[in-house]
Structures are given as C-alpha cells and as structure tokens.
Length: 334
Length: 121
Image (cartoon, rainbow over all chains, first blue to last red; front, side, top):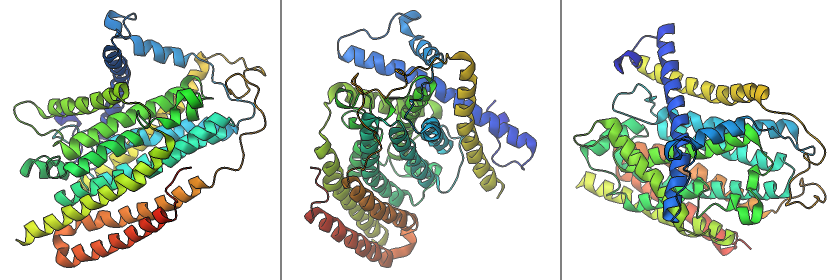
C-alpha cells in the first residue's frame, strides 16, 4: 500500500506528480484531524488536571466537540473593522498559516520517505519558514487598528525573534554530532550512536524552553495574555480567519513536537514496535508535555521574558556549542 | 539526481497546498457565513469603551533594538550551520576559527548587556 505512493526514485512524469500530490494531501488531512483531536486532548488533559471533566456533551465522551467548534467558526461572520487596513487584515492569517503547513514537508514520519521530502537543508528550511509566521502575526496585529492587537502583535514579534536565536543555537549541537542538516540523516546517526538527548542534554533543555516560547504557550503566552490584552494580535479576527490563526498555532505545537522527537529522541527508530507507532508515541509525549505546562505554570512577566532569553538561554546555548565542538574534536582526534 | 529534484518538487507541492487551503476554505466559507455589518460591529473592540484615536501610532523604539540584535545573531547562526555540517572535515583550524567568531559575537552581546539594551523597563 505504502509502496504504491513511493515517488522518490521515479522519473518525473504526471503519474509521479500525482502520487506526490496524493501524499501531500494525505499529510494535510491527517494533520487537520490531528489538530482537531489535539484541541480535544488539550481540553481533556487540562480538565483532569483541574479536577474538571472537560468537554463531554457532543458525541460519546465529547469526541465530536472540536468538529462542532470548527463548524461553528465556519458559519460565523467574517468581520473586518471599518478602520482596519483591509488588504493586510485579510491576508495576515493566511500568511501566518502557509509556513505552518509547509514545514511539515520535511518531517520524517516513518522509515519510508513517502510523505517526507528528503532534502539536504531540511532543518534550515524548517527554521527559515517558521519565522515567516511572525510576519503574519505582526501584520494581523498592526492591520487591526486596535491598540490591544498592536501591543499583542509587537510583543509576539519581539518574543519570537528573541527566542528564535536560542532555538536555532540549541539545534547546532545536534547538527555538530550528526554532521548533517538532513533530518533523515540525523535519525540514522542516532540509530548508530544513541539518542541525542543524552550527549546534548543541555541543548535539549534550551530547545524545550525556547520552543515553548516560540509557540507562545504558557508560561510564555504574553502576546495572548487575556487578562491584559483581550486576545492579543487576533482580537479583531472572527470566523474562519481566526480559525486559521489557531490552526497555525496548533500545527506549530505539532511540528515542534515532531522536531523534538526526531532530533533528540531518535524519531521513528525504536525496538519491536513499527516506526510510525514509535514516532506517534514520542510526539504525543511532547504534545502532552506542552499541555501539562499550561496547566501547571503561571505566566511570566514581560521584563523577565526578554532578559531570560538574551541573558540566560543565549549564553547557555553558546556554551553548549563550544563544549560540543571541543569534545567532538577531541574524540575524533584521540 | 531524480530523488533530489523529486524531493524539492514535493516541498513545492506542500507550499502550493498551504496557500490553496486557506484561499479555498475562505472562499467556500463565503457561501455559509452571514454578512451583516453595521457601525457598532465594525468598531475596534477595546473592552467596550469607545476607542480614542488611531492605533497606528509611533511605537516604542525598544523593539527596534531587539530586532537589530536579532539580525546580528540570526546571521551568526546562519554562518554556523554550514560550519557544523562540515565540522568533521575542518579539523583544528575549523574549531579555532569558529571559537574566535563566537568570541567576537559574545563581545557584542556583553556590550549590549552593559549598555542595558537587554533590560525591559
């Protein structure tokens, strides 16, 4: 079945292109389903942690709750404020969404590369595209012509660019060890050596903190601090444009979880169980961790937020790179 | 070579779908959603109070400083990525070279720190 979709080594004909489109569409629908149930999972997990039940009315155990929410959003009016910068306001959520799905092209789901582009610059591609979302968020905040949106958008941009530096640097240790930017090669390197979370523990700590901030999730959810900014950059958005902002946000939670599982925990490799199941287990553990954080941590202050990245995470990531390169040189030479 | 071009074509297909989904969904949604704008609805929501003035104002210059710092360090990462990939071939020369490069950026960070650019007040 999987072999039917294989396109990697086939000459480029319309049939091959059709297989690629089929593969990409399968990933799309899988992700839409995954995000739908991530929303449900998040509400249930936080519900249990707060001794509530969570959604339980729509369908058995509330399983259809997210579908109901999406349908409701689809049927809501698409309000464009009179004072808003209309063209920018309309395209901003689309700009924010596009990279969130495009980065999924390089995630290695299983050992067979049917749904994965096996490109040499995969990690660079991920980082480069994921920063475009910041533009979409800032555009949305500015174009709304609402003070809360503007503050939310600016905070968001400042936070995301500040934490992108430690995030990119924490990955450098992994690249040093694997000697490749190709995510598939990085998984193979871990199969030969060991999970990179062991030699790169410092790098992993920086990664997980920077990733949480990059996702604008608690304890770094200042851009959407509802008690002070209404809803931050998407205050003025309604209906499906709002839905695309939320979709982008949750796709990034999924993507960062995939990245963490692949770069530090060996991706799809593991004993006994099939590759896709290992990958699913690791990614779910990451997603659960992000939801768990939200239920546990209070929000940090804005002055702590910026200095934490520049004064603590960045030097720590630099130390990690220096240590990793020196040790790797020493091991290679000795 | 086939695998190379096929993989990049796959990436292009992902980007096309990523553009297509919101465009199609928002166009189709136009048939489903109501459109009944009136003046009160189109005002910016600022917790119920009537908004005073425009939000398109001059903004705090502090953000600009962080953006400048970001550019410096993002370019540094961009330079270090190829170095990390080729590290096992570069030997001692590559190691010392990169350490000097990072040391110079650390000087920049210390300068920004001392100048209190990193404070948020």
